[in-house]
Length: 195
Image (cartoon, rainbow, N blue to C red; front, side, top):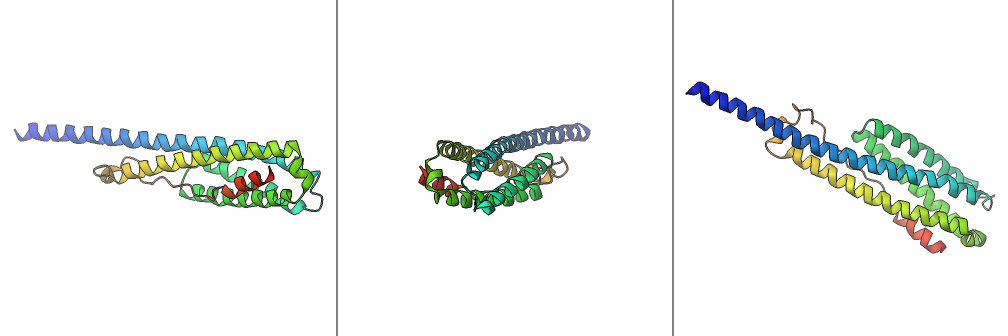
């Protein structure tokens, strides 16, 4: 009788581990997929910036510092985004948040400089690029929120009983890091002022 009970207990524990692992794997897959969406949206956003820089250079002869700041911030953001994509962990997500905040500040500064040039405020290409950038910012904000929701969900799964007992053993020892960078509300507001 004891050996039968032991056998069923071992089977139960094995099935429990399989179910927990499957649930955690699904949660991890979901937040990684959500990060891939952020990656795509940020890449699109980063691809718009050189066009804005090129269109602004013609008019911003004496304000090259604002253009240089955006170009450098974009370059750093591209490098950190690629690194985070290759190794998604708390450090890479934190670094990504920091460089995206820096890029948002540089863009906001550039847009403030653009606002001081009447001919730029009327330039159709600049207006179109600002609209595209604003649309891109909205998609980034949505993707970031989706990623953070997925990461919180995964972390809650990891910390819930009985998964919290087995998470480390099953390869889920690290929690999903939340992505935090300054939302670009200031950037979007500046672009509306241009119009």
